[in-house]
Structure formats: C-alpha cells, structure tokens
Amino acid sequence: MRIFVLGAGATGSLLAQLLERQGHTVWCGDRDPERARRFLGRRSTIPVTEVNARNLRGIVKVAKGCQLIVNASASVFNEIVLRAALRLRAHYMDLSSHLTRNPFKAEQFRYTKRFEEKSRAALINAGVAPGLTNLLVKRAADMLDELHSVRVRLYESTESEDPISQWSPEVSFDEAVSHPRVYRKGKFQLAKRFSEIEPFRFLEPIGTRRVVLAAQDEVATLPYFIPMQDLDVKIGGNEIDRLRRWHKQGKLSRSRGMARQRFPQTFSPKRIAKLIRQGILQNARFAAAVLVTGVKHGKKEDQHLLIRSDCMFPTLYQIRQQGRFTTPIAYATAHMAALFAKFFPRELAGVLAPEMLPPETRRAILSGIRNNSIRMTHKTTVLKHHSEDEEEI
Image (tube, rainbow, N blue to C red; front, side, top):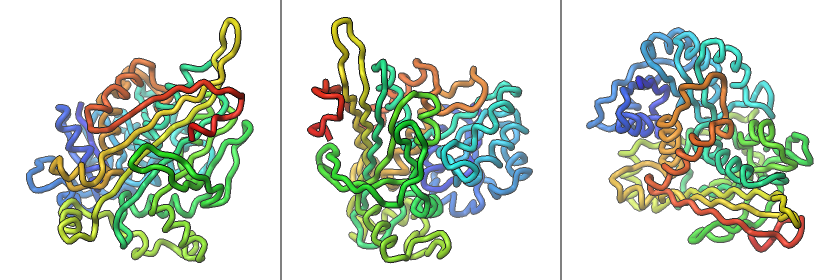
C-alpha cells in the first residue's frame, strides 16, 4: 500500500519505518520536519513534508495518492484527518480517541456512513491500550456465553528521577486532567481522578503494584459491541504515582495548563541514548493485563470462568540491545499499529474498532505479536463462586 503517516514523533517515526520494512511505500507529514528527521534517523530515506495537523487542505495536498492515511499525531486531530481521508478516498487508521464530544463514545463513529458511502474503512484505536487490549477482551468474549466484567490493568514505569515522557506530552496531560470513564452495572459513569486504589499482581519481575482509575479509551467502544456489566481501566507505576501526587498538591488541572517541566517533549532517540550513557535514564517498563469474567454454559452445569491475558513488552534495556533508542510505550504502540496496518481490512467499509474486526484478522494480529519480542500469556481459571477469584489478581 501507499501509506501516509501524519506525525513523525517517537511513535509515528518508528511506525513509518516498520511499515516500510513490510514493503509499503511510506511518507510522513509533520509540523516540524527537522525534529521528525531526528526521530527517523540519518539513515532513513522516508520523505518528510511540513504540514500542520490542523490544516485539512494541507493534509490533503501532501497525502495525495495515498491508499491509507494514519493519524499518529494527537487524537484531537482525528476528525480533521478523517475528513482528509474521505476527500482522498483513502482508508484511515488512528491510535486513540479524543472523546470531547461524548466522553463515552468514540468521536470517529460519527463518520461511519461517510466511509461506507466511499467503500473505505477507518480502523480506530489501533495501538496497545486501546487496541491490543480490545482484541484480548474480544478473544475472551468469544470463549464465553455470558461476559460479566472486564478489567484492564496497565503498568508504566521509568527509572529516572526527572519526568521523561514515554508518550506525547499533550496526550499525557490530557489523560491526567480527564475524569476516568467506567462502565458499571450496565451504565457509563465518570469517576474521580486517581481513585479506587487497589493492589494488582502483574507478571514478574514487576509483581504486585498499586493501580488507580485512569482515563482510557476502551470504555468508549467495547460496551457497544460486547454485552457486559462492568468495565474499568487502571494504571500503576511511578509515572502515575507522580501524577497522582501533583493532583493532590493542586498542581494538575486543565485550568492551570500544561507545565513543560512536568510534561517535557518526547526525547529523540539520540537524546535518549545520551540520557542512558549519562546514567540519568536507567530503564523503563510497560505491561498490560486483561481480566475477563463470565459464564460458559454446559450440559450439566455452568462454569464461571476468569480469563486472563498478560503482555510484557520489551524494556528500555532490551530495546537498546536491538539497536534502537525509543521508549517501551512508543515501541509497543508502533509495533501494534504496524500489525493492524499489515492486516488492514481493506475489503470492509465504515468505522471499525479493533473488536469489530473479522475473527481471522484478529487472530492474525495476535499471532504476529510474538515476532516482535512481546511476551503474551493466557490463563483460564474456573471460579468456585460467581464472584471473581481474588487469588488470581
């Protein structure tokens, strides 16, 4: 395919390189081509054109001729890029939702009819969380006759005394000042920021960590397509602990704006390499767990099951051993997005969340994960009672 990637930062630049490696013709657009070139590296021959993600005409001009346009910039630009894709009669893909129009439904769905009329597909939230987490929930749902609850648990940690953005600072700030979205007893709700603290046991070497509610996007799609009663997403790690501390001190609010010392720009690979050499940045980790409870009907009796999937992504140290200098979150998101692009459903039309993909496509994406140094395990436990087995969490 001919693919245009909008936003060549930490994630977009690596995604562009992975897509080129798959054999696609790739070019990028970014508001700061010089910075984008630093992320791509000197050896990369991928073209970069200056374009502002707010400029619909500009995007259409530089992306002309593409078959797929990927929004790897901030989700606030989703609707502009969706309209650009429609003008170009191109397929579309992004990594997350913005959720300002409706906090409980992805704004991209407003364009379903327009993409159906153009016979084009828009694949949304095609990263790790959301993205991979949605696929794992759907995998568990397919194994059950009734799905009761979904718990997504994430871990993000950076071994550094100073704040170092593993993700876009604008996205990190937006998530930090937004109220978490939850789905409880069949109803959408907004919860308190950094609330409902609980201990959660991740795979070793992470172990048991404290997690809190976070503003994630899974709640904005999954309950619409998979019947369930409860869904929430919680995050743990020193980065969320730092944000929670600033929140309690009154230093973290939308009205105060984004302080650059707390949300620095994402470092280029060269800068990350320098921080590692100086000992300022020692390591970083990223992990995800999805726990689904439900019922499998049997001839004699029903089985109450807990289906758990865990993903451990390469650490900063392991990524460095591969000869790359990027953060675990950017690495994981770019590799997942590349898999979504590899198996992009060009034969379909409309706006699709990952859980809406055909079964064979979902299986192909999950099968491709292990080829990218990502460790994924699944475990099914028969519960003695209808409630969740606390031993498993």
